[in-house]
Amino acid sequence: MRPLVFHPGSPLSVAELAAARLDGDLRRQPRGAYVARHQPENAAVRAGLIAPLLPDHHAAVEQTAAWIHGIIDSQPERLAARRCPHAPARNVIMAGVTLRHRALEARDLITLDGLAVATLERTLYDLGSISIADPDNASARRAFCEALAVPGLAARMPEWFASATIRLRRWRTVAQLIESRESA
Image (tube, rainbow, N blue to C red):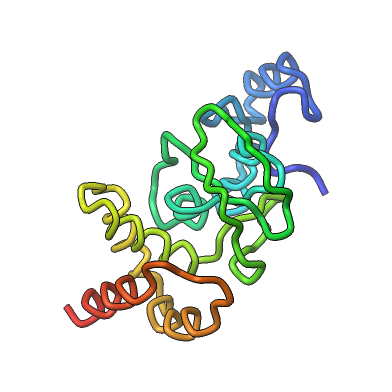
């Protein structure tokens, strides 16, 4: 299976990518990536665009996951990632990436084009949690409202909260926020 996204040096050189772009076979994407001209943008392509930018054994979360899932339209300027389950706990510093060191549960992960991404349920919880912790974060609040528009997502949240095996600090407040938005 051929890759959905091409990054310089993997498997094509910068010169080969530039030539393919000039020939009209590829189109340039943000952060130096290329995709086939006729490739529709979908979750797998968006995941492939940022996969090399996140550290190994980390998953895309928060607004980054919301963008990958298609909840928000524009790629966040600063990416967010959290440790995958069973990944070694070590300090990693990457430019342009906010790293959360508390690991995700395995149930909260899906894999898209080789990148671990938080599920829609986890993404909604994270966006609600950010909106509560930082009421001035308009982008998280807007993404939270957009996520609530995903058909059936809000209805799945009570079961998701009940099946959590790790402590979710703001689950009651996020659940109330979801309920108040749904009833409005």
